[in-house]
Image (cartoon, rainbow, N blue to C red; front, side, top):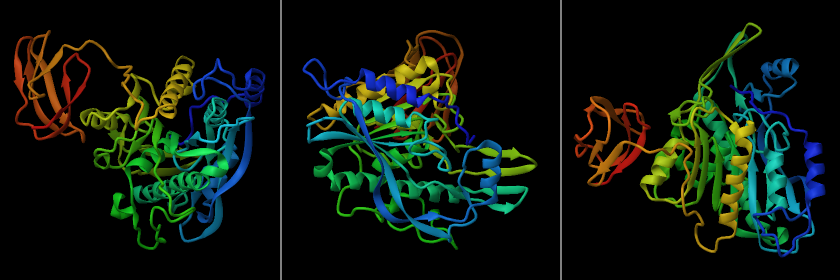
Length: 444
């Protein structure tokens, strides 16, 4: 649902601990890998001016705030807007003399209707501080939030088109942040070719869309909604004349709206996801599906279909594009707040970004890691055109495509071989009774 499963952190204590532990750089420490610096924070820097924000709050916003103390950004329409700046908080390594530093732009979660760049309920501030202490320049950005609500007082709805338009606005804002960094690279002491995105949930979706959706034509035509203002080209706001796409992405439980956009894009990606995630689905589905009931009021929610980390990983694997994945079986959304996973997630994120930032090549990613790896009884043969199993008798099997459509079903026993040559070129999932699902590609 729209609320987070995050555990509140005592940020004041955390910062005090960081200050005591931080030191200036010395030869025994490695930039981007080890904590080397104290951190300076500059708040509310404008990275794009005069950007239209939704400006007609729905009564539901005040109702939720009075019950929870949290703002959920619901609006009456898209025609009432107020031009405001897009802001970021900048975290820099104190006393650092390096002038060609790597950058991480961090985007918070919140289902596109909640969260903030300085929201301590999430890990945004924590990650920004930790990365800056390692020598990165980091920025927590405030992208535009909010979706329009329609219907009667007690039976309200949000449709998928409104959500899609909100995502598009967010992608515009992420691109503006990247262009701001490139335009001001000399002033900020950063390398314009080492700008990375890190996002949580909605922020992960926006970060992935940044590298795969290059123009407005990559978004569905239905985002042009009758009676609503034109959203404009994808690079409409902020600095112009600079590339808006990042050099790498960390996506924590994210997804994309069209997997076909990935193509042969070799931008390095780190994917983390729980297989039981019901908010942003691990495979394919509509996030936040269903509705919300409160005080006799019902809010029906429809969102566009998203393709989660499983699908993205499948395509990158089939294309032999280097990336890293951390998938945890049976775990739900935002599992970095669970004690047993907080440290592994951070270590994997920091190590991924260290390898990117310290690499002199196009990509520093040399391997993929899967928490779901196990010894499988399934063997693929002859260019993935046949498979067999090494154990079991009369086992059900099925082959499905990335949209979940069944293309082949049957039974198989140990020692038998199943012909897959009838499959068209593409990426598929093979399910065999009692075995983990495996992904394979056909390229005849």
